[in-house]
Amino acid sequence: MNIAFFLLPKEEVVYVTPRTTMRQALERMEHHRYNALPIVDADGRYVGTITEGDLLFMLKRTPGLSFDNAHTVRIEDIPQVKRHQPVRIDATMDDLISLAIEQNFVPVVDERGVFIGIVRRKEILEYCAQTTKALSKGAGGADVRRPKP
Image 1 (cartoon, rainbow, N blue to C red):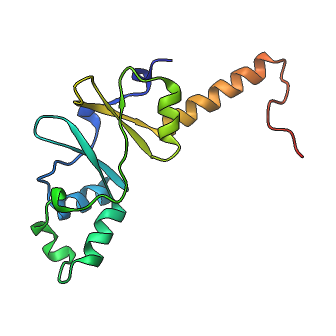
Image 2 (image 1 turned 90 degrees about the vertical axis):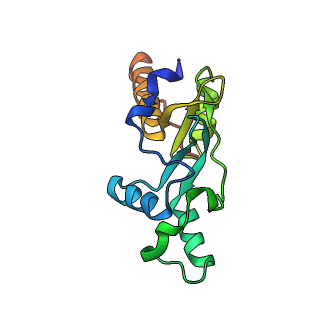
């Protein structure tokens, strides 16, 4: 299976740049109900993912910082607690699934590291569920669930 099948293209992805302010990132997360956003630089390269946790820790660790003055802090100045790994567009499904176990979405880049979109965990799980269902029907309706101990 080609991972491009699951790709949500960059044009449809909500993302931030390193120059985006903390307040703008918070507002985008709230508006779209996301807990993480990809960071894409001026050259279009994926450079990381900013999470609600990163923003919360920044608020906690910075005396005097609040939502009211969060516009003074740029995303590039906020430490990222965890590095979200991207996959190349030619990656295998195994590579994609391995990352999706730990990440709500997997950034997808081309051979130059240019961000071309994301694959959401939801789409991977839906595909796996449909495949399992089809396999179950193909096995004569046999129960393919894990046996009870």
